[in-house]
Image (cartoon, rainbow, N blue to C red; front, side):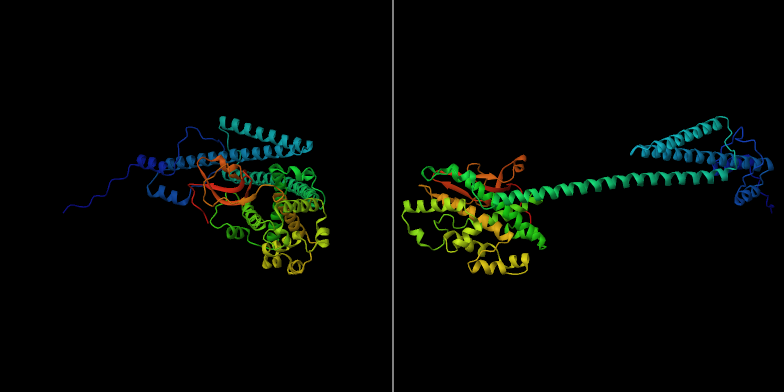
Length: 455
């Protein structure tokens, strides 16, 4: 029976090389320091590994030397990056001191930049001379980490100050713009009041009964539409103030229409107002029962032109109070009670006082009713002028889904034609008019033919 032979002793040189690969060390022909007063302790596990593999003292010493050199290099690199971080912080401080300009801060920051550049230069020379461990590596590493964290904190503080300054600047600009907007809004409201106030329509003063023509009709139509759009703005403001869902309200008026831009929803409200206020326009008396509708054509023309002359320069509320039974007063009353729903009025004012006054033949002097009455006055003026012609004037609507025709229609938005393809009518905003053989185009909101309707 053969005896068991002990296994041969491991090759020490091979184990040493393996050990060096495991701990990722590179042997150095010359140590980075001649300072032998410091000894970086090798972890006990590695020492036990050395002992278990029966390393001799020279190999163990070589391992310690390699570990020390690596620790020295790691500490040096940490110190290098910490110095670079300090340089970045100093440069950021220098930039911060320039806006706003501060000479003392600039001088101090400039000196800090110079100091950090000198420190980098010293590190370079130390590395070239292989004198990189002026202190124990673990102390250098710890101090470098502290220095880098302090530099990062300083950089963050400078960035925060810069951002805070930008925020304050933006807030100041916003405040200034808000004040400017408020002043412009006040001026605009003043101009609107002047434009919508009682008084003469100076541009209509040249209209003569003997030579009324389609050009006069278009001029008055533009005046009427300005007051319609003013009332629509007033209506939307009151709806927003009463927490109405504007999107839902627009969808209820024009269901299934996809609006390209958010502010285009105002066209839905404008279409509703125009549809209601112009309803009955083709009838001489706007579907209001009165003896004036039984006049002969010539007397009817003279009557309506006389109404046009009186109402265009009269004080509106004064005229209504002086003529509560006039055809115009009846028209305004009927349109208000039909167009302004009781729930709408209640949500705006919390009561139905206005409605009760109008229903009883009185006319309130609230801003809302004044805007409505001015719109009604201008539409009534347009109606009076239309029936002052010796030729028939009728309204027409563009059918939904009809192909766009620039003969009978114009788009309320110019940007729709930026895209290619054909367009169809989504809805009519302002009706068109036929004055004899002359066509005054309707104003329509368009959508691409190929685009499906969105909810």
